[in-house]
Length: 479
Image (tube, rainbow, N blue to C red; front, top):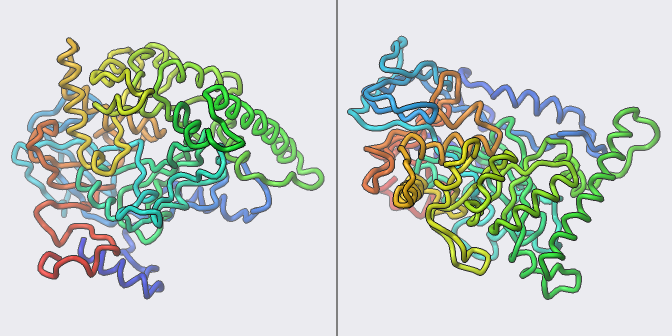
């Protein structure tokens, strides 16, 4: 990793060198081609469905074939494979089982009876938009200038050199969704990032990942705007704000769909906010809705039905356990903390078994999230706490079941479960080697691979990712 940082630092001054960072064995992901094709249209004055003016430039780090053997493999797709092996080539999982073939030139890792899991997916992060060190200069998560700001995109606030990124990677997290904050009824677009070093946020963007739309209900919007003339100051004011925005968005979508169908006359004028909401109505953007109370979640479902869009997941749903059957029936996920609650009125009815109580309903998608840079580094421990609470509540929970709360279920919430979240042939080789059972408080992450390339090694500090922000402030002997 040291070579990577030397390169990154140098490139800050000598940008030309950035054109040749890796060998010819690397290649952009297939989605990069799609993004480039859309961008090639160059029609900034026209609203193109699912347009991507800021395409991913992520390039997988080149790596040799890899075999990790003599490990307990928690796949998130079935029972743990004891003393098994997993084979990786070209960034993909080639084989997993009791034994695998070892290709010529493969790097061999003897796991010595340790554990391997898929890379963790954190569906609710504010890394980069609330960067560290904190302060108003780096507080870029809430565009709290209007109750509805679907026109803003979180990626334009992300600081790629936030030193919290490498610490999150060291916690085994390989994919995150960065969301705007919850001050607004409609906060703006999220962005899905790979937790990898990059000079630009485009270099971290998960190729082909759908955008999300951050919405927030309850106390936050009415608290922020309650003293302003344009409100809202009540929950009924909140709902009026959502409905007004969707009415306008629906008219805008019809206007542009009609023009795109025949290209007759001058195109309508673009509106960035309505454009984002129109993409939600078209099914191209996933709604991630901050909502604590069960009754408010039910109301948000009604609003979604009224305007014909789907909510992908409720975030922070401390009362999700009260309507777990409804969420499962509607195909809506529950992204929750393990034990945060009672810190404000709408969070008063939290229970520690929330996550397992949601998960026990067939067809549910229960997952842990962090909403916190420190918690993101310890999501395995958050899951362990939820497991304990569920068992104490009388539920039968296995480690394989709980693993899904931080891997495949979270990948589903991002629409990426066909590429990440489990250890299966053909999926991206995002892997974590743990020193022992990942749900033990004594366990540590030892190695992390992203698309088959090892980006973190606990025992080799030369391979640790340091952001440009930290260079110059780290003692020489520690580099």
